[in-house]
Length: 133
Image (cartoon, rainbow, N blue to C red):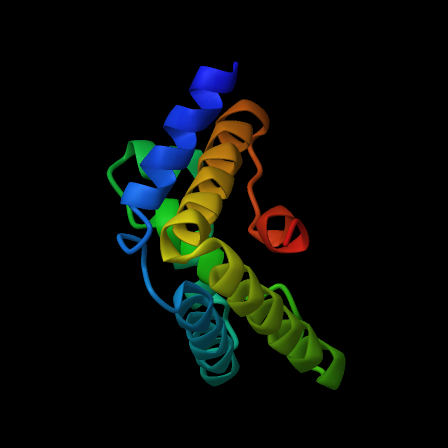
């Protein structure tokens, strides 16, 4: 077990600068953009195109594998804006401590877990990924 831990530490140190820099900022900006688009188009077409749907993914709409992260989990109130600022703040703090690679890996593994759970249960959301921060 000690040997595995040392290998993982070397792997993370080697790949320290290979992640997506400012990942939480990009996710936050995308959340705000999707929210603004939903205000402009109240028929929720934007949400329908972005949400995770196993049937749509199997038909070739692979962008849904990533874009479900951009659906805002807040309703646009002052508390929702505070929620977004909190996720941005915590995400940036984790990025400073872990580095870009580990933060990118953390979000990617969260997305993988959401994909697996969605194909098993039929429902996926980005809320558990952000709540685990």
